[in-house]
Structure formats: C-alpha cells, structure tokens
Amino acid sequence: MDVTKVIDGDTLDTSVGRVRFFGVDTPEKGKSCFHESTNFTRIAAGDKVRLETGPRRTDSYGRRLAYVYDSSGDSIDAQLISGGFAVAWTRDGQHRDYLTSLEENARRTRTGCLWE
Image 1: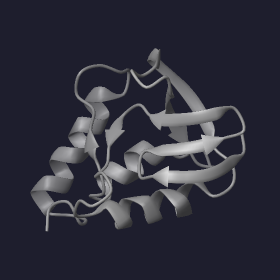
Image 2: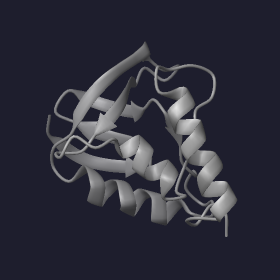
Image 3: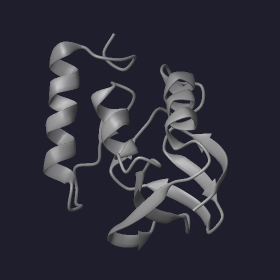
Image 4: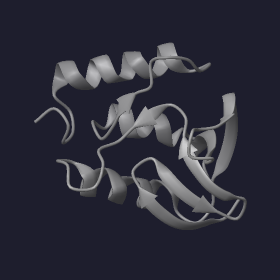
C-alpha cells in the first residue's frame, strides 16, 4: 500500500488510513530520539509498505495496528528496534519475543539514539 505521510517513528498515513506500528514504541515529539526515529521510518518506509495484522486490529485512538514491512519485505519494526530508535511492545503480538530480543541486544550494545 502507498505511504502518504510519516507522522512519527511509529505512525504512518497510508492509502488505507492511519497505521500505528504494532510491535514498537518510538519517542514522542519533543523527546530525545524523536527526529532520528521519524527520519529512519521515513527512509525505511519509502512510498510503499506491506502490513501484517497483529492480535488486535485497532488501538484506543482508532488507528489500524499492524506490523509494517518495507518494499524489500524487511520488518521496519525490527529495523527500528535493532537500530536503537524504538523499544519493543511487550504485552502481546506474534513477534513479541523476537522484537524484545532485538531490544535487549540494542540496549546491551548501546546502539542508536535511545541508549546513548
């Protein structure tokens, strides 16, 4: 699907509406690492992404929840976490264990702007 706008590191506007990344949480506007995570998502997403539904379809704000993949098929959620731009969502999701292991590694190696 087409990406029409990157809102922040974990939220995109697409041809099917607003999408919140299911597996990650990036810093909010005004917080350290906000600009870096938003720019990373802008580059990684490009103009097309693929979505994978998680265990819940929408969040409390009515945004669609999904794991997001770039045009090469690589997980942008995983890239954000392993690059030190995001923390993993730990409550649920089919990729929770994988994503939390990526966060543990990023923390340990102090990768990216979150762990500086």
